[in-house]
Amino acid sequence: MAKLSVDGTDCSIYEPFPFDTKWWSHKTNGPALRYELGVAVQSNHIVWVNGPFPAGEYPDISIFRTLLKSVLKRCREKAICDGGYKGEPRRVQMKGDTNLTQETRAFNDLARARHETVNGRIKKYRSMTDRWRHGRDRHHFAFMAVVCLTQMELEYEPLFAI
Image (cartoon, rainbow, N blue to C red; front, side, top):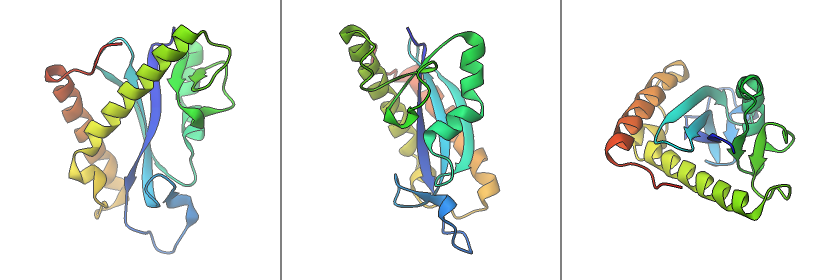
């Protein structure tokens, strides 16, 4: 059984000059920075953050391959992911994977829903939903602060159990 759910989340930024499609996010329909988040399945802990990456240049699977794939390989673990992680069947359990039992698929659906709850709690902070108007090199400081605040919130308002 996988011990981690992984997903990417995008944060809007102002259009860099000159225009470059590497910043374009289909999730925000505009320029954005993308982060990879990992949430422990059996606890209320955010256990992985990787980023920022230009959203258009790095789809979720590319970010996964930069570092987390090798960490999971070393630990002999898999991650629960959505459909954006095709091509890594040895390291991920994706939505719609027919090699899994019905019980495992149901469990993974709950884990993905739980992960989306964490993404939503991060996005409740306006600095993560409004367009970032400061230097892109500073965004990760704000993102990590929001992740820490969200983790503290999870101590008092835990996620639903699966």
